[in-house]
Image (cartoon, rainbow, N blue to C red; front, side, top):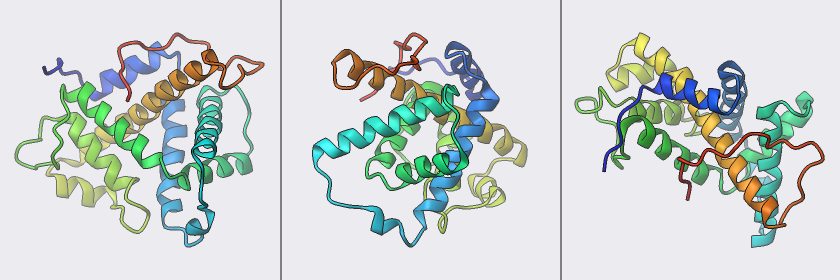
Length: 217
């Protein structure tokens, strides 16, 4: 069953409001993460960062990255430039980030367009599908690796949309990616705290109720 459509901008504004977050602040942090992820994907030293990991070490890595992401987005703990770069590098070299990124892109498409098509963007049929447009923009800008990403003009020309439409969709897509990743990270953090897997931080960084209408797998 298809959900009622909502504009990407209205959704981004509403989610930030519910989470008591600044649209501009979420955009700033999410954009930095995505830009550095794209660059890190093409780093020749990236392969040396991988090592054989047990399930336990992967879970610990996820928990560590998740808590740091929550701290950064919420602004509860100051991060130096060096600490932020270390955080982004840990994300870049994780084996599971693209799986989570794809999950977030699916959710953006579902929430904005009402369904996940599972097909590539089609110039003739997807002109009104803002969620699918955002998915294509984020993938082409950030998620294909620095040597494979496209510039803005190449993206909007290839998509058959106007320059103005592209520059409306881009910031909303970046914010939606960041705020939905935040909601996911917050939910998983609270679940692990309640299960006794991780300790609750001294300063509670999860000070807002979990958004119940979002289903993550």
